[in-house]
Length: 118
Length: 108
Image 1 (cartoon, rainbow over the protein chains, first blue to last red):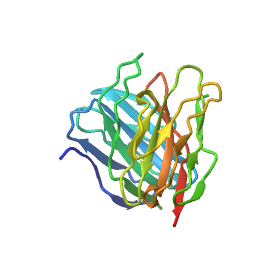
Image 2 (tube, rainbow over the protein chains, first blue to last red):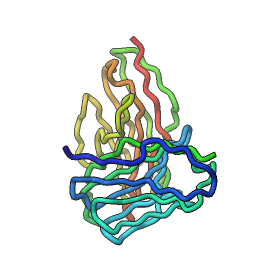
Image 3 (cartoon, rainbow over the protein chains, first blue to last red):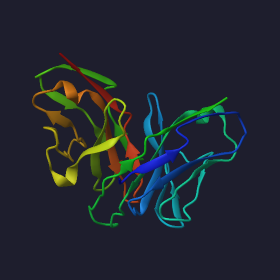
């Protein structure tokens, strides 16, 4: 079954304790992305990756890191989590789209990871 | 700076009545715009994209460059349309910007 998986689904941690949220897709997608969803703010893009070893900042990258060493995985790393990073996080993937043309491919979203930082 | 605005946090509409979810954008250039939907306890999923000019589940959206709008419309609301709707824009750097979302509540 084609899907995007995230782990863990729920996490409660304390300020400053490094954590990683994994994201994996089995659709051979080039493009992967992380979002956070907050009440009243909707979805905001944190980081995205056009392909292996290519990552770019989204709208709210501060406090986060990502890596893309393999095509299928795109982990989100919080080196020193803070309470303002308490949120619902979504990973998404899609086929790449060609720059300069209007060829957009649908993003497939993971189930979400609810993170609480105390 | 690019921005996507959905002015309504909540929209309540009677079943059978027309629906219009508003989306306005700010972007210098030719935008690519989309609507995403999130039903209760389900993942976010693409509803439609402006380049396809398609109608999905009875919904349509027309890009109006003069008004910088991409409103989502449906002539007759159904109870299963109750969900959270997000308008999104893709910029030239392939960054995705979402609006804050509008919760559509269909009244019986």
